[in-house]
Image 1 (cartoon, rainbow, N blue to C red):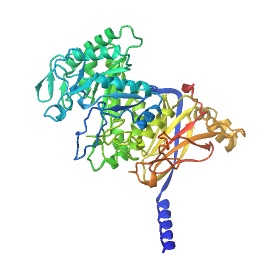
Image 2: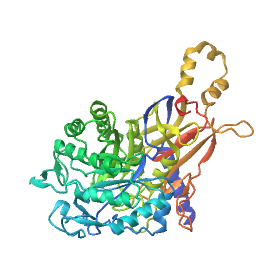
Image 3: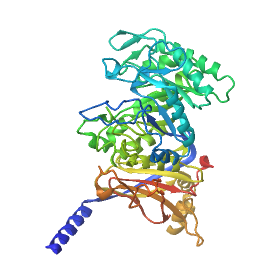
Image 4: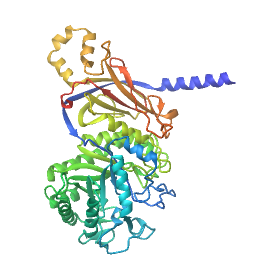
Length: 539
């Protein structure tokens, strides 16, 4: 019986292998000029305000993940952040415009969030200053770059359904910022409001009014930080892109008020959507959001070239994400494609919803053990530099390809994402410089042997060993047991798991001879580093 079962499994695996198709693909990398740039700390994650009784679809996945009740003493949390050396964390979310800061001459009582018939179904909440001190001690210890979202509804009144009017009351924010400075807490950037742009989500504010309030906030920042160099950035509006609204905000706020335009992305739909996996693996669906990146870039170039574009919050699926999808391997196809695509449109920062909390956390809400997307983010952070390089591919849209200068070293890093469930892509990487040379000197090239041409085509890749052989470095990501909804990611066949001491595991590449074949199997992801790639923009 055992023999027959083994033989059956062998035939099944053989059938699966035979069903795969092989496709040759040429990727031409142009390293002569960067097409866009990101911030050094492009990878960002959020910490939200949701209390434990925030529920969607009969699930309550937030636990104690709020900035108010997050267990800052958990060793896994600190180690996960410290692995990035300098990680940006954006504190903000739906309830930030309901938060009171328990400092100064507060005009009302400062109580905890409770279920109520107000914005997003909760009452106003409170941030006590002893907790704020604890949070900042933790951020300082772990090397966090802090972006903090301020309450932009304070002092306003609801005029009609979801439409809020009146001037923003800056007194509580002023006292809070002043306290923050007095305690020596370092804030990289202050963000104004959350999802109040356009028609808003829980509430909306007119763009002209919002611009006037931003000018007021900028004046406060400049006054309170007058002896600081550099001063914290002012970023806004932290909402969904609405062309007319965003255009007017930049026009009315004027030159150098907004340092970064933040927008939110949830392009996969609701967390309960039964088609989420198919959307994640559909290149046409993934590409639709590129129009938003393009439009925001045009808005900034036309009305505010002093500002940069940030994705201030992005979780893929909204309403807390999707259990057993947002926290599994399959989500990395969406997440890494987002990071690659956004960077090509000059997005400087990309904040993932969330670091911990909901179903889309980089870390498990209960155990703080990293989910697969955590390792995807860490690999990007360690391998992909600021300069974005042009890539042209002959492959079908199911092979997504992005290139950057390598981070902290010479050469380039290439990200390859295979969305196909049956095509194994055999990749040839070419340098546009060498292609141009061959075109210009075609007669001479024809006289040379195939070996010499191949050597010339790949002479810019790899680290040279003592025998003169060149290498490339590969980081191949697959799900455990081939299960796309596995919570365990494999790196070059080895499971990524915390060490016995709770440390982040080493993320070591496989070194491969540069002239050996390179492939990206179906439904897998590969980072490839070419240390000696001849890219003038990376020097």
